[in-house]
Image 1 (cartoon, rainbow, N blue to C red):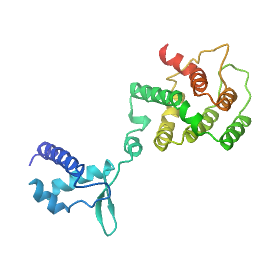
Image 2 (image 1 turned 60 degrees about the vertical axis):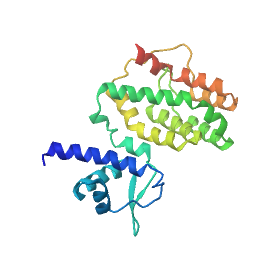
Image 3 (image 1 turned 120 degrees about the horizontal axis):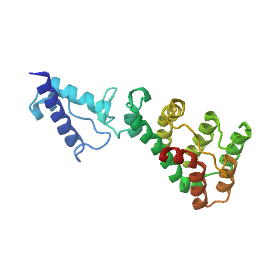
Image 4 (image 1 turned 180 degrees about the vertical axis):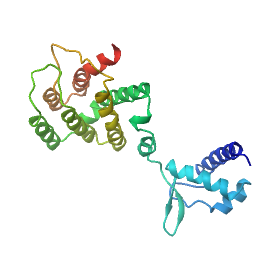
Length: 226
């Protein structure tokens, strides 16, 4: 069999397996049939089935369990996407779009922050700000300080998928800033600082916080659209 033909067959069997394992016959946690049984059921060789199953493991759809065999799992979406999130192999356009996604996430999570923030969270945010360096340059920030503060916001959101995305995006965040893709930060007469954001969180208004985060990130949006 030609390599291209084998690949096409594996693609077909992978699709068939996804349809089979997504059926009500195999709920999450169910043990899937052995390779030989699947091969007979699908009318292909065990080699083809084995390769297709390997792809499903990579996609997080199945995993091997000791003394049980392969079982159906709920895919960890973040870890699946993370496999392709190396800044060195992504083009400039993709990196820019990923950075835009980070901005959209942060503006959009105001409601979750207001709903789930605790007095201890606010205390920790204030402790982060207290350690920040003081600089007279408008809109200047240290990337480490920005990451520390915004990482805490993701933590407060109490959404594991969003927190996973944030951790996944950190290498992109660092890369975009160090690569010069977003040079020439615009200077604004009024900026929303981290301290201002804490005050907005304490106001318990999601609308005010959303507007504040958007204004806090205004420099990034201006650079993207200039």
